[in-house]
Image 1 (cartoon, protein in one colour):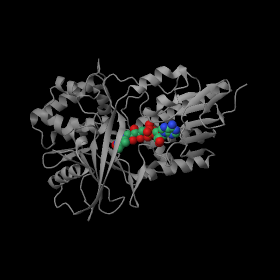
Image 2 (cartoon, rainbow, N blue to C red):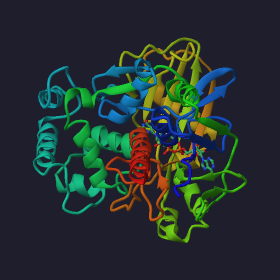
Image 3 (cartoon, protein in one colour):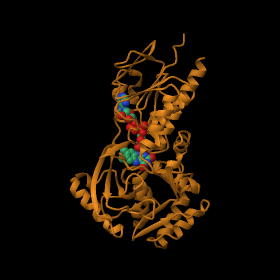
Length: 430
Ligand SMILES: Cc1cc2nc3c(=O)[nH]c(=O)nc-3n(C[C@H](O)[C@H](O)[C@H](O)COP(=O)(O)OP(=O)(O)OC[C@H]3O[C@@H](n4cnc5c(N)ncnc54)[C@H](O)[C@@H]3O)c2cc1C
């Protein structure tokens, strides 16, 4: 006899939420277990002295189709502000893609870029052309540094354009980062339509953008959310799946944890030992976000300002969250990890004085360091699929099979894919 359908989702990050939204929308009974007291995982709201901020500044692009579809479904799509792609690193560099159809937007953007001479522009155009010609597929993966060397990319291009893109998208230093994943990102940004290459910036905290609306959506459709409920292990027998500390038996389980927690969750499932072993071998990269509260709004006239010669990489005006608020992103590993908080603040403020005319007085600051912000996106990385050797048990998360690095889009896609696989399995069983 087929056991009654009862689905457990373990983990309430964007992957688990996307899966639970999709399943409850189809009227299926879902219980989502989240170890923390809040939803959102690595893209969540954080309270700083009564101000709602984020654990980390997040950037989305127009090519994030599943994320945009989900946010629109939840009624939150208008909390994103859309801008044409631009890289501004005053006074040295500016590349802004005009509102023209592809590929003219990139061609004209490069032609009019400030801080690149004609050799740089020619090298970049040739590089993008060559990648396009080969469908953004490499015969063999290698590091981003190797790929750029092979295509004669100049120092100026690497410094002002390719390294910032690699760090923002792959959160992995260029000498370690997968050239294939980098090419996939270029395909869906510079190589895609103008709308796909747009930058989308949240104009609300990440809780409002996703977790609040997803939680209301799931519960309105009968789904249960159990916050502060860590699941230590999963067991399986002829009745179905058992979660440690729970009496219920589940017909399906979606593991939507951070990859670092996956091996422990799978420890009692010998069929899944190869997946646990694979994921246990992943490396991770940090992201630090420095929140700065100034006396006045920064009023940058660009969506994000590139920072040079120091630890900070991007500056964002976040006065949408509170007057005078700004955030600075410091992606991936580097010498900044050895700096004290005070030294890091001093170094970033030095960069801001260079980049912003008349920087207002600083009132306060708050540094949030996420040690395992993303997996290290290294060449030839093996990522598990969403279905596993155990029918009924699925994996969702930014680390599962995807041609994207660890991003919101990879997470949301994986959750939606697990929901589709479960729906298909249920349909087949009946
Ligand atoms: C600072 C920072 C900046 C980033 N910037 C960007 C960006 O600009 N653009 C972008 O696209 N991406 C960005 N990312 C990456 C993006 O946030 C992640 O890829 C995405 O949030 C991962 O979602 P997930 O659901 O796969 O995993 P997670 O968010 O890690 O969710 C897993 C959830 O499972 C829970 N959990 C774990 N174990 C258990 C257990 N045993 N029982 C119950 N619950 C459990 C955890 O508490 C967590 O809530 C950034 C990440 C960070 C940290």
